[in-house]
Length: 238
Length: 238
Image 1 (cartoon, each protein chain N blue to C red):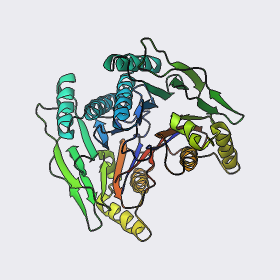
Image 2 (cartoon, chains in turn green, orange):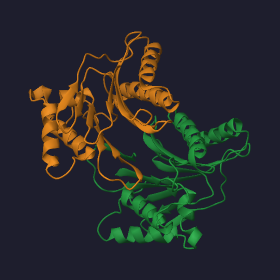
Image 3 (cartoon, helix red, strand yellow):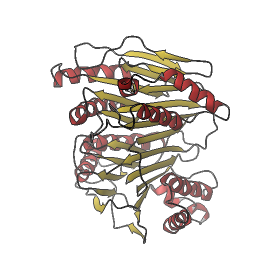
Image 4 (cartoon, rainbow over the protein chains, first blue to last red):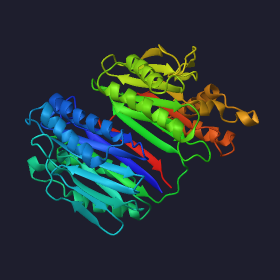
């Protein structure tokens, strides 16, 4: 088995910085975690917030703190730092090699999609962003690591794409079509899924995203591996 | 322009964990840093050391600490934690958007290769690992971000591959041939370079790496970009 993870993100049109932050970190007891935060509003201020949240979470995770505790700590930290005046959404997805599960932690009204070879379901129970209140709790789901499992996490920029012209994307249906399309040949590659979702969102926004958009896709692949761990980053600069 | 980064790493044969750690982190003032450490010996103990070093460095970098200071701090920290009895090598390569340069920090006897469209040169001045002495200093080089620049950083597993059978790789010549080969069509992709170097090393070790091997390739590409930031991870699991 192999875990494949892909991230695609872009800025709100005409802003120099994305208010979303996404980082991947190795877990001290095996596995990896991806942490995504979306800071309130956009631009530099939002980036500071999301960066602060992600930094706090990855720092705790790399010390072996469990995901739920890290999310609570990030919430209390943001609440204390900004006196409850600023919010951020937070998602953590971990491949935990101690429990051989995927742990999905959500402090985000936006749902998380879980696709298995049989169906796609949405984790969409009510969940609040962090930073506004004391005692904010995350929602946590744990899913066994089984081949064919694909989890898609995104910020609200993907949900709201096209809303100005009244043609938002049905993300679940779009994901379904991507997975079915590729299944004819082989597993849909996470990067292809992330890119297709982002591309369609930018198209709906007529090439000028109305918000920062981040898409994270994590897949448990049954493909044989060569025991090589790989990572790539593509960073556009002006 | 676009920064492209690729990492390929594998474990010493018959060990469950690599003693090398590599992490990528976003810089608070723009850009990214990749941090690579190789802990003394191999297996779990080495992993703990390299993880501790990388964690310390990325935590400091994400607070805005400059690379050289982060390397010194990691050295003092390891020296204090392990009473000068354990060493680790440390490399940091940063894309610093404040200075528009690539900053290469080295506490590693193993050289770093810098390829431009004209030539390949090695940063091979004497450099010591961290953790053994007080006051260990890194070597720091700063290179302008120009299209066609490719930097290759690796742990000693790549250097020692094949040494048991007396047929080590001439890494510089091998890199040269990879770059020339691909130049006929287009820029050599960093992942292709990292994979080819690692693959050849494993071949020289007859499929059973005698040490952990990590290869990091960072390239400044002139290719036009779509303003999308991307990241992928492939993590083999058993």
